Length: 268
Image (cartoon, rainbow, N blue to C red; front, side):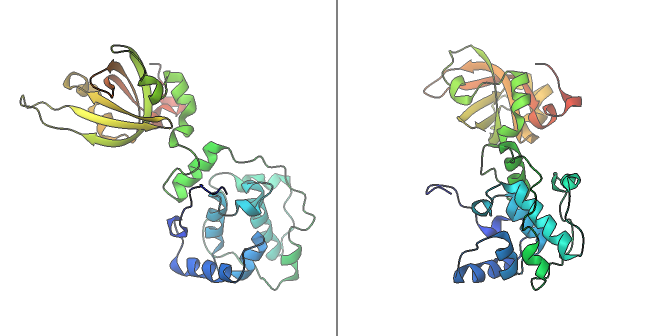
């Protein structure tokens, strides 16, 4: 991990208990962990929590073959500790999203001689490295934050279909130009007007920056519910240049989470 990397707190991991954190800190105080087996031997952390720690990168420095291989090692340790046979390549499905350990403590006996031999000479199943999108998905599920990359990474295909351009590029467009942008909604305002109508102002954040979107009353009949409720939006509209920061006057909005699903795809 680089000197300027983002470091998340153990308490950010969903499902981790105070006693789990204390167990890790006590063990780490004596000496750093040298392997997954060393971690399991010197802590009392439930294996479902260990699974989550691996998926969000807590063991990356101990995982030369990547997170999938380390998840495989954890799975194989549990199998052998219960008297099962080493898992062949057909067991790969256990490492797919939604797999793993869903409930209860896993009974790995640290005194069992098999514990030391669990992965010795094991033939790694040739699992691919986790993609950035998969890492971000795990982080959102377990940490509730996208640490490795922007959440928009998960929606590249939808953004391509809609013709989305980066916010930094939209900011350079001429006034009146029609463009499509996308991002995570970071702010929403609905100030009242003297006429009794309302304008919806939305700020979207993408990996390159932010852009302000204006949803006028004439557009709200179709799209107000998306502007107010959808956390991830794609917006087509006309660039308005007033002052230093341009904005986008919306003509169409899409919920990116719906656009990513084949049955909800629509052409802009």
